[in-house]
Each structure stands twice: as C-alpha cells, then as structure tokens.
Image (cartoon, helix red, strand yellow):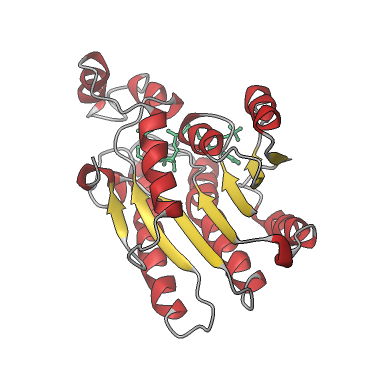
Length: 251
Ligand SMILES: NC(=O)c1ccc[n+]([C@@H]2O[C@H](COP(=O)([O-])OP(=O)(O)OC[C@H]3O[C@@H](n4cnc5c(N)ncnc54)[C@H](OP(=O)(O)O)[C@@H]3O)[C@@H](O)[C@H]2O)c1
C-alpha cells in the first residue's frame, strides 16, 4: 500500500492528481479548506481510503499537530511508499507591492512557502528511519523563474520553493534512507486560478489580456494532462534528486 499526503485536493490540479491516485492500494490524506464530495465518492468506488483534513494552510501553527496526527495513524510495516505533494497555492495579492494588502501578503507566503516547508520538514523528520520509497513533489510555477508585474509575492514564494527543493536535495544526500524531492512547473492550466487571473483589473496585472487570449486560443492545459505528469514524477523509478522539472520539457 502507498500513502499520499496531498494539499489542495478540492479543485484544479490537486483534484486531478488525487483522482489519479485512486486504487484499492491507496491511502490518501487530502488537505484543503473545503471537501470535494465528488472526489470522496469516486475514491470510495475505487476502493481507495481517503481521509480529508479540512485545514487552512495559512494557519502555520497547526501544521505540526496535523502531520503528527496523520503519522500516528500510519503503520510503517504496511506501506511500500509514502509521498507528499505540496500543491495548494494562492495568487493574491495581485497588485504592485505598494498597493498590496499586508494580510494577503502574509497569507500568500504562509500557504505557498511556509506550509510546504513545514510539511516537508515534518515529513522528512517523521520518516527518517523508514526504509521505503519516499518522495516530495513541490508544485511550483514559471512565475518562480520569471518576474511578473503585480505578482511579486507569488513569484517570490514559488522561487523560494524551487531553491528550498534544491537545498533539501543536498541535505538528503548524506542520509541513510533519503527522501527524494523535486519541484514541478505545470504550465498554464485551465483551473480557477486562471479565471481569477482573467478577472483581475488590468492596472493591477498588466499582462491580463495576454492570459485572456491564451484561454480564447485554447492554450490552457487540461488539469488531467498536467496531473498525469505529476503522477509520472511520483511513480517513475529514476528521478533527478532536487530536479526543477518543467512541463514544457515533458510534453
Ligand atoms: N493554474 C495555473 O495556470 C498554474 C500555473 C502555474 C502554477 N500553478 C500551480 O499549480 C498548483 C495548483 O493550482 P490550481 O490552478 O489548481 O489552483 P486552484 O484551482 O486555485 O486551486 C487551489 C487549491 O489550493 C487550495 N488552497 C488554497 N488556499 C488554501 C489554504 N489557505 N489552505 C488550504 N488549501 C488552500 C484550494 O483548496 P480550498 O479552497 O478548498 O482551500 C484548492 O484546492 C498551485 O501550486 C499553483 O501555484 C498553477
């Protein structure tokens, strides 16, 4: 049996990844603020065990007890592998930084960077002497590599996630039972996050009309296709430790 801990399963890419994990050999722990009843039903039909933790990742102080609670329920002897997918994210504030709301800035960094770092830290700590396949996939963004007007907080968080991935990979080199960790840039996906971008005030995000065009021209990637690439990264035998994968090189 494999155990998957995944954030942001309720919709978008996270929902597609979660649905791709359903089998009678899967134990899934989903973390997001809202449940998705359809996914819960699908999991039941497929014979997967799915536990939903309705949790706000902005609330950093509860993440330690959340992960320890999950690990208390796991029986190491019954597992072939354990996986963490840090997928949940928020774009807001979409505004130049001097017009951004402080609370939204903190929330963005908490959800996009602090939560993945804390969950990875706990995952690595709690599985230190577990001899099995252990993998962390951090869902990053092209915005972590290229600056965008109005996205400074989001770009900073995603850039931070990439360098965090690379640092942890170096640390794991010397471990007896290392965790494999990679970052994945998923391209432009047809999810709520893109609708949010298209409905932004152009004065806050000057590239808005280009994103409206991407949608009109059918250039957005279907969540299922992108989820398939994440599943490959979870299951492929060989992956590049600390790799910064980009979907454009995987299509
Ligand atoms: N869409 C794109 O074009 C695109 C491009 C590049 C990178 N990405 C990255 O791909 C990943 C998935 O994006 P997406 O497009 O699927 O986004 P989405 O449709 O907006 O979904 C975001 C997910 O994150 C969860 N989430 C947001 N805030 C949360 C919080 N405070 N606590 C817990 N969960 C929270 C949401 O669940 P709840 O609302 O239920 O909490 C939801 O499941 C993200 O890391 C994003 O940065 C997306």
